[in-house]
Image (cartoon, rainbow, N blue to C red; front, side):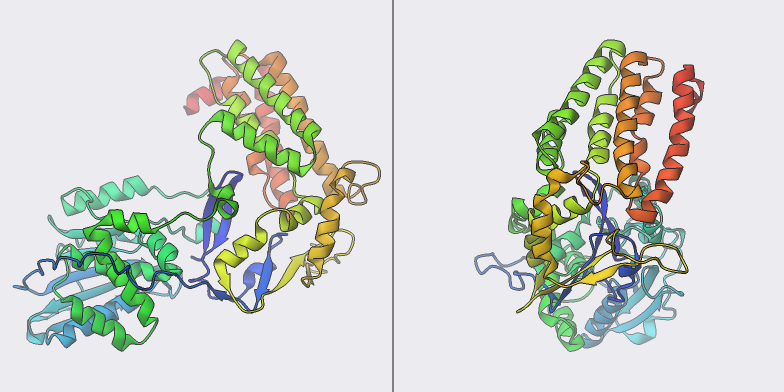
Length: 513
C-alpha cells in the first residue's frame, strides 16, 4: 500500500508513502538509479497541529438519537489506522456510559489488504445482541478506501438513507507494483455506492491529501474523517468524548486531535481548509505541474532537452514534432493524437537516463530541496545505491548487476560528471560503448526512421495505427535488465503494428473501437 502512483509531466512514476511504509527497505532490492537512503532523517511533521486562532468556533451539530443500536462500518486498508478508529469510537461510547461493540475483520491482510471495522453503539449494553452489522443494517459507512467501501460485503449492508463519507484518495492495490498501467474504476464504484445508499454521494473528501499537507502524516486521514462524520451529525457521540478517547489512546495525540478538528472544519467550512493548503514551492513541485496544452507540452520538453544536452539536441526534437504535426494536419485532416504522441515519446527516448543525466538530476535540479521538504534532521547523510556499468559485479544467481552503495562524497563526483555531458554519444564517451547505451541511441534512430515512414505513408485509414506505433515507447520502462525485458515485449508489439501499417491494414483496430 505504500507504493503509490505519482502522475508527473514526464509520465507516471512511483512514490513511497513514508508515513505508512513499514521501513523494511525491500525496495532497495529493485533495479533503479533513483534510490537514496537518507540517514538521520525523520518524517517532517506538519506545521498545522493547532488551528489558527482567528478561526471562528465551529457550530455544534445535531447528534443522532439512538432508538436502536446505531450501526457503523469503517472500511480501509491494513496499516491505515482503521482498527484504531474502532478503538477510539468504542472508548468514546464507553466514556458516555453507552453500550458498544466493536469487531475488526482483517482476514490475513494486516497491511495493504481490505479491513472492516463493525461498530454498534446503543444506549445500554443489553440493547446490543450482535456486533456484526447485518445486511441492510448500516446507519453510517466510513469509506477510508473507496474500493473496499464498494465491495459486495459492504454494499450489502447499505439501506436507503445510509450516511456515507468517502475518502477520495486513490489507494492503489498491490497489482500496481506489478502493472504500472493499473487503474481503478472509481466512477463505477462510486455509482454502485450511491445506488446502494439511495442518494448522491454528498460527502466525498480527500482526507489523505489534507492530512498529508497539513499534518505531514497521511495516516491522519482516517481520524480526519471521523471529525467530518461528527460535524455532519452522523455520529451519536460528543466531540468531548471523542477527543478524550484520543488522549487516552496515547498515540500521536496532538496529530490525531488536530486531524479530528480539521475534519470538522472540512465539513463545516471547506474553503478555509483549502486556503490553508498552500502549494509547494515551484522548484520542488515543477514536475507535478501537468501541461495544459500541446504547445506547453512541447516547450517544456525543449527546455528539458536543452538542459539535458544542448540547444541543437532540443532543436532536433522540435523539428520532428513540427514536421509530424504538419503532416498529420495535411494527410489526416480532422484526426489528432499523432503529434501529441510523438511529442511525448520521442522526448522519452531522447532523454534516456544515462550516467550524465543521473549526475545532472542529483546536482542541477531540486533533489536536495525535495529531501528537505520531506524530512527533518540535524545532520542528514545520504547513501546512494547505484550499479555503475563499469564497476558493478553480476549477481551469480540472477545474472543482474549488483548495486553498490556510495556515500555523500559522490555528489562532488556527480557535479563533475554532469558537466561532461557534452561527451554523450561521442567517441570520447566512456559509457557510450556499453550495450545499454548503444541500444538507447539505436532506439532514438529507429524512432526517427519510423517518423520518416509516417511522413511518407500517413493516411486517414492508417492514422490510428500510426498513433499506436508512436506510443510503443510507453511500454519501455525501467533501467538495466528491467528495461531490457520491457524492450523485448515492446519491440514485439511494434513489429506487429508496423506490419499492419505497412500493409495498409485497418480492420483489426476498427473492430476494436
